[in-house]
Image (cartoon, rainbow, N blue to C red):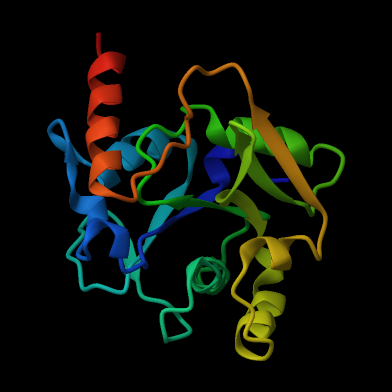
Length: 205
């Protein structure tokens, strides 16, 4: 099992943001920071490195950007595969990679530590966050060793659903139950963005 500071991170920004009207949703602002900047601010102290998965050309000097390794806008599993293969190719010694969406600006400051707590007895598990009676499949720890199996599922089986793939393996869920607001609230539509701005203002009081 990796310790928190040696866990690499993948931020998924490969979607087409249809419900927001297209474009680069993660560059929308809450206060003086973009959604992506809010996420990086919270996750960077918890991880060893950050990879941004985006199918739009971006200039990001602070971290690496990679488009999907399997083309055709195949969804978040393609982004997860991109991260797993990237960190394998980089020779990462980590056992797991953290995946995050690029539209969840309130992720917990202890996210990695808490997710890792589920690996104590089953170190090869996939671990997903759970809050407000729902699982968050893209907020998860993924074993790097699953890269080959995931490529087979995507390319050969044409599989698209994260949970269908994850449930083939040992899947653990870690629960956030005490928070008044959902720490994994994500911005999909313009009204979600306005709500996130209101939450951010409340949080700063």
